[in-house]
Image 1 (cartoon, rainbow, N blue to C red):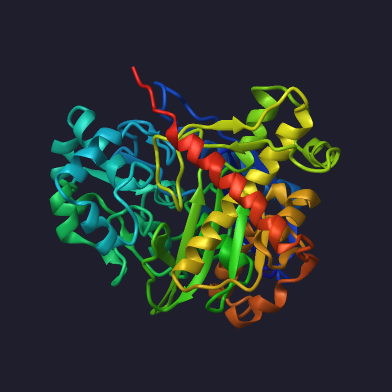
Image 2 (cartoon, rainbow, N blue to C red):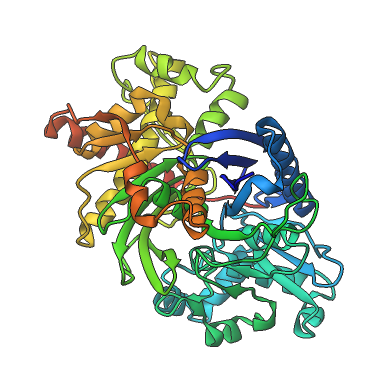
Length: 501
């Protein structure tokens, strides 16, 4: 039987997915298993590493069964994961020394403040393209070294390994034979030299992070190792290689076929992430992060990125905590049931504000409420907040000299026509919604399939097709009047003092 499938593994913040893609690039089977975060203390968010791996194992088994496929049918595997979260484990036993610290956790705040007092803020920005912030992995690694008994000693003896979620899953997929990552994921650790796409030995020394802990950085389309026996059902006459790793947002950029400089996408997932291809040199833009988009063979492509911590998760909060509706899909009809937001703005700064504001002390707010305000106005304000946050980052790009002629969008929330139309209106540019909204898994599948020889990288752009273009309909005056109200709401969110016990 010919090897006709690529298995894409996509582990996000809330679920693990396995997607089987055929030679035409179409999805033939998929499965998703939820992941439950842990909250050991207020503002601390962790993940059970065993659940991260177990959820992915379960998703793989279900997907393969649904397709009736075995290991002999799979040409290659691609892996994409949420970024910045990290794990440390024992190289011999494979057992983690502690839970994974999740990207949104603030338990490392004291460490990053200490580094700031030591004058390292500029070093981070200049060397790595990202910031000295608890969002990135460096502080998480330092926290584990400083707070888990015996970890620093074992790390310095070379007994431990560290990695972002991709590295932890790769270790398990290959039976502990591969401790590696790619430059797109490594660039979100705040430890990678952005110019050379190699670990910054001097910065690691400043932070007290042993280089021996860190994984090998390989090109995004490299051979990362072969699957261990038992990961896939059935026998295979030859090993099944892991042939691609990408951070989830970079995989989405690739999956949206943003292969040319200036092309951009925004993913509306748990978080909201704007990414733009900026070519073969990093661009350090005020308010934005500069990261590696991908490294293919010997060529590095860079991205500028704007992250908002809470996008789709805001809708989940309105559903689960406030009970304003039963299903996320109801937000479209609720938002459309009122002609406008009625003066209500919601700033979902539940964990502070990320790009382009970088204010972790800001707090979520709903402003402009009157006795005439309804649940529909609040829901519409939440939907519009996703678009306003994208506008914040598009404007930051423009101030840095990067113009975006059109925006491609993906993620589950963009089935909402109200959101997509308002996004086009508040940006004043076309918004393009593709066929197939989950571009992350497809992106890493396309890269892995190219590595396996199923198709060429050049053909990937031809596989992308637009389901609908949303053209801006709003006048410039109304656009700016509404956006001024959003900026006022953000100012209010930033003026509320953070209170901690």
